[in-house]
Image 1 (spheres, one colour):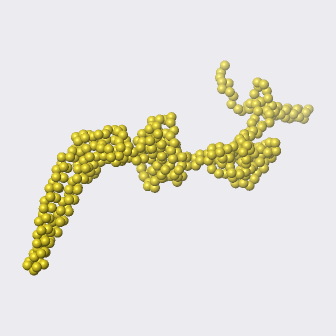
Image 2 (image 1 turned 90 degrees about the vertical axis):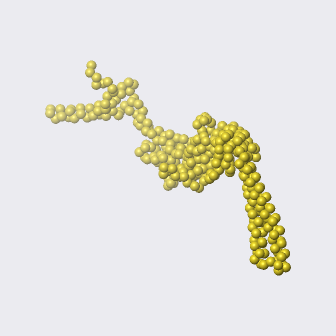
Image 3 (image 1 turned 90 degrees about the horizontal axis):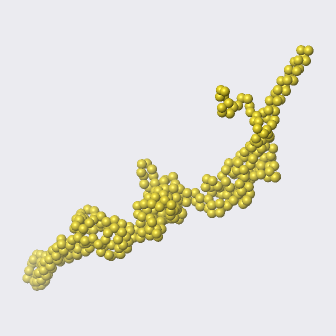
Length: 393
């Protein structure tokens, strides 16, 4: 009798375990393996770097004066359009004309002395040839004559210098352009002692601007002349301007231990929106490929194993770079060796191994269906219950 009860207890325990197993697993469907695929397609690939820079005219000239004086007349103002040779300012001529008159008077005096010394030298030479004067007297007459000639030459140079300085009193534009800045007013005294005073800054052509960009030393190795660029300015945040790298300068600039190099970028400005001094936010496209065959980068990171693909066949290859495809009607996960090219961080160029339209696996996931019951949910007795179940009634 006791033996029979013991058998009943064992059978009951087995039944309870079986019910528990069925409760937790028996009413769930088998897990399914889901494959996300994407077709090999042709896309445009781009790599770029960003920087900031300053917009400035391609050609600008600072106009100054080589002589000191008082500004008597100004003929231009900010934004004035000027032509090459046009008079834009005049200095007071009083002192300069006086210097010219003194130089001319000195030249006249030196010329008179030369005339006298020439006659005196000719007379002594005649007497010396006849033996009537000593060699000493002849040499003195000749020396005085040579000094008089040099004095005349010096006086002529002084006249020329005074005339040139007088001409500097009339200031003309050296180029065709637009006046960007004006640093003086009428009646102001300018002194040209050591540095040439700055009067105006004239830009030659505001329809042809440039951007001087500061490129970090880590990026400068990828920048080349002829590369396409785009940039924006805060004045027109919705406009994107096009340009091209025209010069990569070799001189480095160090600011707060940061090394940068200047890169010159063309900036056509037909509508005159771009103004000198604006800050530009620049993108330089260091690599560009159009319509190249490519695969998503995440397809290159897929690493299937037999455990992650279920009952399907796993076929690997020896290629260094590979993508995975479904073969045999979905019953096989197969590796395909590919040759890679440029990448933009999202897609990578493929030069061999696959063709356009082929589908490659980008993600493998395990999909588990919901429990088979209509409303009942089978939960582990050790799992936390839904919020609110522990509230006191």
